Image (tube, rainbow, N blue to C red):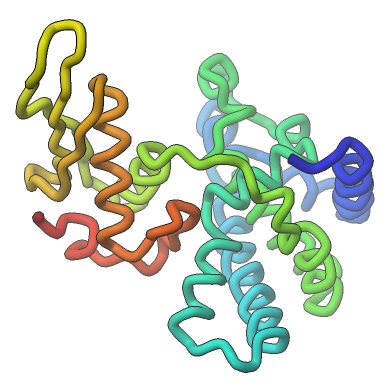
Length: 249
């Protein structure tokens, strides 16, 4: 994990960038849809800025990789970009810079831990970059992207494969993920569980472990590996097809 000095430096950079936004634009960037729904004003949420910021970040990272890795083929560049702009990576950066303290949340979202929820943090960071682009333009937003998002030390937090797979499935409206115990073998004091990972009613992977939790993690990890995420470190939720998500074993 990064040291205190580096975290403080990144927070200072982020705080200065936040302060540079006009008050109305700044407020919208950090207004979660839960707060807007409670107020009856969905137009005030950060969802449109999140849409813009997602595109801005993706382009800035793509340009950085293209310019700094001239010998790397397209497929590898795509995976590198996916790692840098994944929900997991963005949430790690957002947490490091203390973005959660800026969020405006609905009461229910606040009570259920929304201020620390990875998906909420990642979305708000994208919205912030969208707002920063509107205020300062391309050159400055690209420079800020390099300062905040391209630090591998910040993004090095361990990743739970179940969380990663859950985020992938949730990115497809209507999809459902569940884990089903299909077998338990061995003596009572040393059982081995076999668990199936089921997406939209289709068995897509299987895992084993000495507990249900371990078997579920193994099943999720096996799906990630089989679909090209062998390092367990990244995914690009915007480039997954229905077939990739629900492909059977």
